[in-house]
Image (cartoon, rainbow, N blue to C red; front, side, top):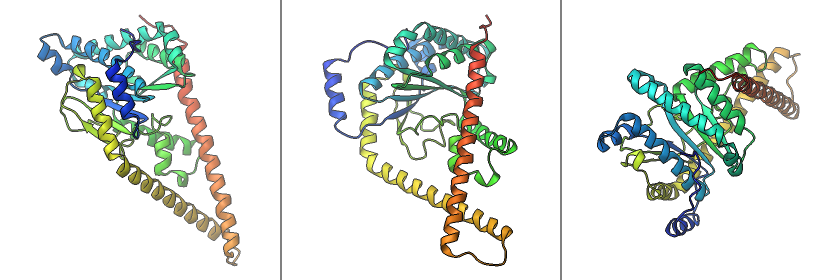
Length: 335
């Protein structure tokens, strides 16, 4: 089955979509695609078939999202915790991933037509070498596409992602790209795997479980969270519409909370910059206190320097990550 389905929406789907789009629409939706194993048990089929049906539902859901004008989707495909499952199930999931990423590489013309950029977020080093290479080829092949984005969280947990972001900042300090005083909440967010994406507006979890299971904990602090009882392979267009409606009902309060958080971050950064400038002036001091205008000039100079350091560091970090994917994609896939 293709990653992107070409089927046109029905009349009722078009009508419902147009009604929903009269209100505020989420631009980025995240899914915890839960319930594949319970679906398999319910349908009296093998677990692997349940996971396969889950992928087919993802392809269908992506079509619905495009119809609704949702141009970015993030999915929780495989948690690091899933490695604790039986060897048979893990091997089956790895094989399913091989099949789907191999299929993606044959669909480049269709992906280019729709402008789909595939990103894979997670610790690829935990995966088999051949799967790492297939994933890297898919990421590199669609990197230039920019109409819609599919972020696949694979070998991922949020705690692992946050720990990795801290390591990246430590690397930046060791390399002399940033100073310890440049480390901040905002910078940590820029070092996450998802740094190229806006935070999700809406997070949906299926199967009736009411927890995030270590998924996008940092990014969904101010997102609308919707928990639905339907099993993922049975998900429908109407379930998605219900979740979007819940987002619309929460829209004003979410926007207010996000604005207050951004304001708090800006004030926190301003205070940190002032503190650093005061310390610098104290060390440099010639015994004469500076007037307000001179202090403001020093503050602006320091802020510009910090922003330039951070910009250079983030460029270096992106280059490092791009190099990993490029090097992996240039290797012959090991059978």
